[in-house]
Image 1: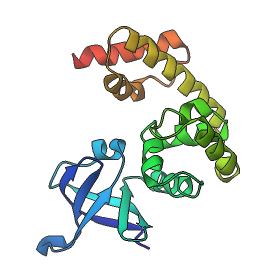
Image 2: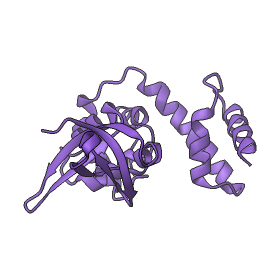
Image 3: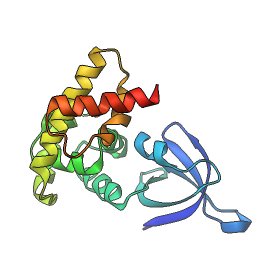
Image 4: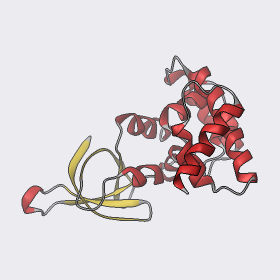
Length: 197
């Protein structure tokens, strides 16, 4: 119904932000629910953004959910078609990793990646995979899941050395695409973390 809205970021809170879509004169503000990854990537207050949205209709109220990328919106929409997965659980899934990686985990039947999401147990993860596997097309899914497995190992190794998960996850995208082994990926992340401290 409302595919996207553009405007100025007014404020943000726990799991939502407010977007002023009223133009120079103001007047029309939307409270938009979203995941932590989107909140982290939003412009600062006063900055402009285009948000792809999904209007969730409950019996007593309407809730607007939004994302910076169209691909995130599409994944959110199809996750909501799975029995037992509502908007809050879908947001939890979107917070586990980048959208292509989540899609790859579904295509390659990687239940353990989905169970990282808050509110997703093994049975729900298996249901998500069963219901969505044929609806998601991702040619490079095997390569992506291999990379995800390595990155999960990198994360666990660095957590055991005392690094924070959020710092590690921010560092993972900086890994050189040529780094194919665990050692090479660890080296790249440590280099990134060393620059930040």
